[in-house]
Image (cartoon, rainbow, N blue to C red):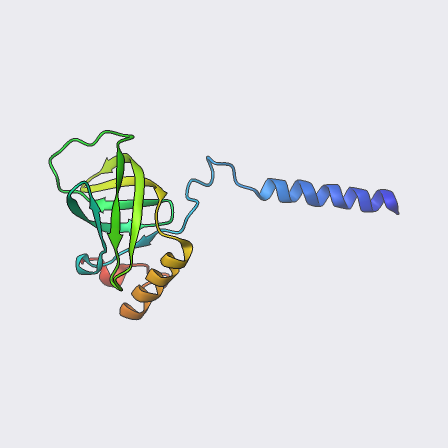
Length: 142
């Protein structure tokens, strides 16, 4: 009986360990919130410029970057972000890459989970159905 219980315990541990995704399998640690319309995007004030935020999470952001400047990977950015409700947070991070007209930034300091939840509620009230299975199909042209 004791041997049977021990085998069950080891089996459960192996199963739970195999369920854990490796870093290669699970690249996205945080939920990303994409803003469907330009006029709803919060702005990031970084180095004397205001950049609309296209997408944000606790660990990263995509900024609308129409500058003709070359962006170098690992460049340190710091500034602030003001949301529609007036709350302002500090942003700090490093550039990862430029993806089309969006600058991808890995944040070392960004929005909290509470702030992200507030933003999600704000968008859900403004755009009912935004988080359905269709994703942004209703708002795709914006």
